[in-house]
Amino acid sequence: MTQDELKTLVGRAALNYVPLGEVVGVGTGSTVNRFIEALATMKDQIRGAVSSSVASTERLRAIGIRVFDANEVEDLAVYIDGADEIDGRGCMIKGGGAALTREKIVAAQSRRFVCIADDSKRVDMLGKFPLPVEIVPMATQRIVRQFAALGGTARVRLKDGQPLVTDNGQHILDVTGLAIRDPLAFETEVNQWPGVVTVGVFAQQKAAVCLLGTSGGVQVLNF
Ligand code: 5RP
Figure 1 (cartoon, rainbow, N blue to C red):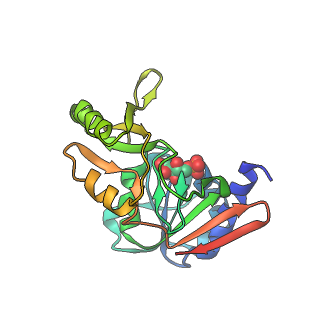
Figure 2 (cartoon, helix red, strand yellow):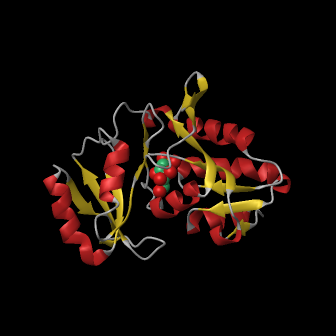
């Protein structure tokens, strides 16, 4: 099976986790796009969605799903999103699509994070995928130096030759060369650096379940 077919497989499998009659948290990315397509088949069975990005909001609205602002709903039963890496405890690196801050907000509002991913995302230790960090631009060089002190190399993510601007009007650093042995401690530390909006390690908001797309079918990992 191709990676795209695996994404379609887990996107469809995630429908089993959608709470009927409720509002569902929806993430961002190519795997989630497959989930949104599948969600169209049951759009009349849910109340709506809270979305983690402008891109997902547009896709949800295009298929006729009502999108609520996160402030309009209290808590969500489920948040369904992809990952760039997921380890054996459900900790993840996210933010390849630059939506990490809103993803963490919606995940924090949800009782259960259901991660959908193809099996190339499963790792023993986080850190091979360049770690996305959303930052306030004026703090860029200071944060680059802080990552260098940890052995990491941080680069500003570009789009069309200019710094990419997130949905929140901020920039993204992608950091290579890190071995994230203790994701919770790492997330807690980096999130305290002045100018960091969100680090793309999801250990506090880790996955409760991962639907992993493999050539043998969907593997369900419970954490
Ligand atoms: C976006 C994300 C995505 O969930 C992550 O990048 C995985 O994306 P894809 O499903 O396209 O591989 O964190 O910010």
